[in-house]
Image (cartoon, rainbow, N blue to C red; front, side):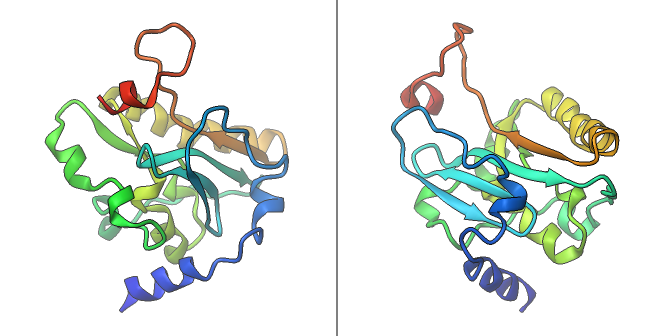
Length: 181
């Protein structure tokens, strides 16, 4: 079974194996109290919050020679669970299907992965955050076009991304209770 083989590879990822490339400046600081896990992938690393059921951040490095290749149809509408995170601490696609005005977007873009197995690793639910559809279109443009442009111009670029929740626009992070509303 292909999925089980991929899940096994994720479980065996060696902590720190990809840190030099994808976290060249070290782990980002999380400035509030929460339990989170570092999830290592060949193409990116993320800090996953079990409290918020989503990544707090993802970091990846894009080389100058990066090729943006489309995600195959078999993966385009598929987001799979991450075997390293208990289902009780993970989102599901049903959460997004129930909300018409919210969808999911990928923090690490699967189209930057160099082969099919790595694309499978990028279409994990632990690589998604909630987004408004209009923002998702802009986000997709940034990931497909600008990241590649900057990587080419600057001989590679490290990207650190994550969700920001500030519903009242006061410039301060919202509480976990407010975010979950």
